[in-house]
Image 1 (cartoon, rainbow, N blue to C red):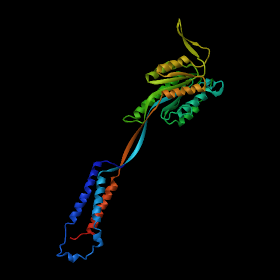
Image 2: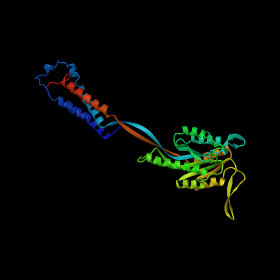
Image 3: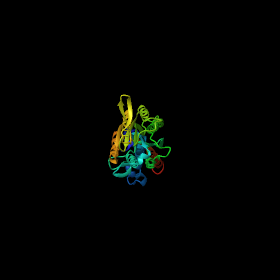
Image 4: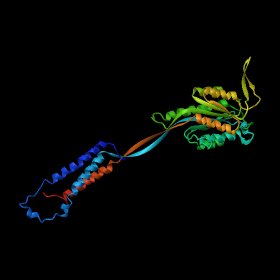
Length: 355
């Protein structure tokens, strides 16, 4: 439907016939008197006389075009803007050498390969229930003895998935051999904090920013116990709790390395005999931040864990329709001016009336 900035002016169209008649009547007021009609009975009207009706028509059309121009016709251009209340998520992946072990003895796939594949499927989606996270900020931190940012938080995930595939494990004889869970968590928390502040600065003053962080999440994947405590995991988890960051901790493989028991001499850490990750530690840091702990002994259970995180941390997409208008009155105004000019030209030359 046509849109007008001042549609009430279109009511003037009702006056256009009246104004045209008044203009035509004023032009016909002059007359020539004859003593008898017999003198002009045999005079036939010329082609000029026959075209006199075009003058009121041109006048009428000019008035119509002028009124339409005054009402300011506009062309609406529809636009749908999508905004997201999403999550900012950092994967924190253990790159210690033990991640080279098989996740399941019945499957020749290593733990790190399963982690890589399912991280990418969490981001891109798969045909087993993961829909993908195209609207979220996602980044990657890995840790051995030292933690490093492999990918900052990004919303375009093509490069991120390639970086996940390129994760290299720390050789047991290298300087990076070790498991610094706390350092990995602390670095990821700092990245989330920085991204939130940067996003707030970038969108300062915007009434409807394209992306707002709904929640901040760390997904920790490790198969070992913490043996580097420059920043301990509980201290890093406390930092996350203070900054509103949830930790979903996932123990990869089997068995608990150490557990805390109550003795007459207080709490003591004792080995469970199974090796592997510290289940109690992973559960503790998850509880401290309002997240959740899960263990994955095979690919199917890890897949289920990703589905659970995907379900718990939902992104809300909002679509708003905007319409911008482009002024279209100029052609109507030009048409009105042209019609009036033609009318005046004809009225003064070919179709001039005497007297």
